[in-house]
Length: 142
Image 1 (cartoon, rainbow, N blue to C red):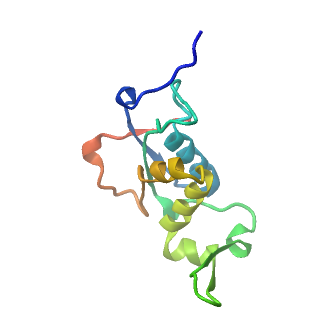
Image 2: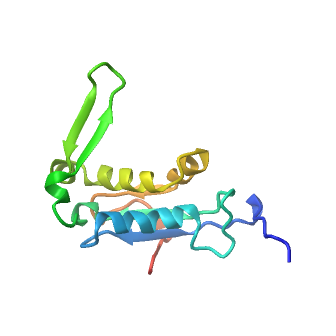
C-alpha cells in the first residue's frame, strides 16, 4: 500500500471553537495546536498544511495551575541594547489574556514556515463574543 500524500485541492478546512473557561491554559493551547496542525485528521501528513481553523473564546477565564500565576513570567527582547522585558503571568492574564493564550499556542506549533502558516488560521478572543458566526464553527469535543 502506498503512502497517502494529501494535495492542496483535496484539503477541506473546518472551523472549530474551543471554550477555555475553567480549563488550564496549556491544555487548551495543546488542543488548539493539535487542530491547527491537522493531527486530528486521518489524512494528516507532517510535510503538508492540512490543519483546520480554530477560534478560542473565554481566554480571561482560563486558569493556571499551581503557583504559575505568581512565579511564571513572559519574557521577550525588543532587539535594542538592554531591551529584555518581563511581565508576570498574573499581570498578563489580568490585562491581555488573549496574548497569553496566543503565545502558548504559538510555542506548541512547529517553528518553521508550516507553523507560521498554521498560526494565521487561529483566532483568539478574551470573552465569548467572536466575529466568525458566518463560518458556522462547531465545538471541538475531545
